[in-house]
Amino acid sequence: MSLPILYIKPGCPWCDEAVHYLNRKNVPVKTVVVSGNPEAMREMVELSGQSKAPTMDWHGDVLADFGVDELIPFLKKHGVG
Image (cartoon, rainbow, N blue to C red; front, side, top):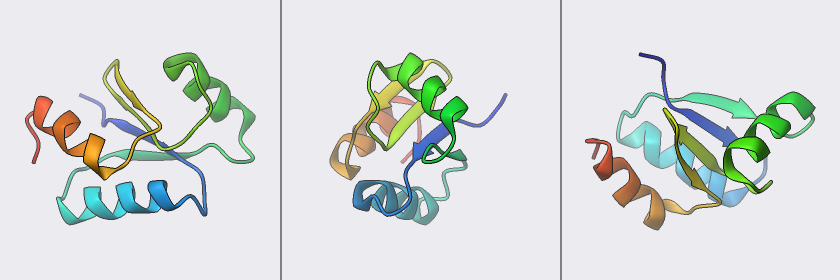
C-alpha cells in the first residue's frame, strides 16, 4: 500500500511541527510541497476543500489544517502512535 500523503508549505510552523512529530514517531509519509506547485495545490484543495496546510491524506481519510493536537488522535485512529 502507498504511503499517506502530507501536504506542506515551507515556513509554515504547523507544517514544521507535523513533520517533526511524524519523524520522531517514525511514521512514514510522502511529503508534498504545495507552494509553487499548482498541481499539488489543486490536488490538496480537491481532497480537503481548503488551501491550508498541513493537510494529510491517509488513503482517503483527510485531516486538513491541523496541529499536532489534532494529528495525535488521527494517527491513533489509523493504528499509529
